[in-house]
Image (cartoon, rainbow, N blue to C red):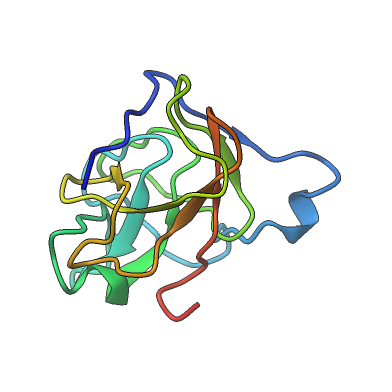
Length: 140
């Protein structure tokens, strides 16, 4: 297991041609940040109904997973999350194309190996700098 380094300014790339295929959650009512959320962080809904960054060290993480943040959010902000097909410039060059990435034991981060809270992966490397979200909701 290894924490995947994240660039200081990750960016979401939704190209015009592919954006119609990217799942996002802007129409879900009352998606509110329960904590400050980092850009490109896998997030979940917790029992209070708010959005928090996922922690792969918890076996309950997968049940609440909903998607990745496109930007930073402050606690209390309305939140939109992106799912299958969203592409992020995540890293400065240490991703592996075709490799799976999993929720890490640190809030909102990714790992190179399966964790207690994520045994199937939430993203795939597209290049040394970009990854694509490969999971929609917890049931996908």
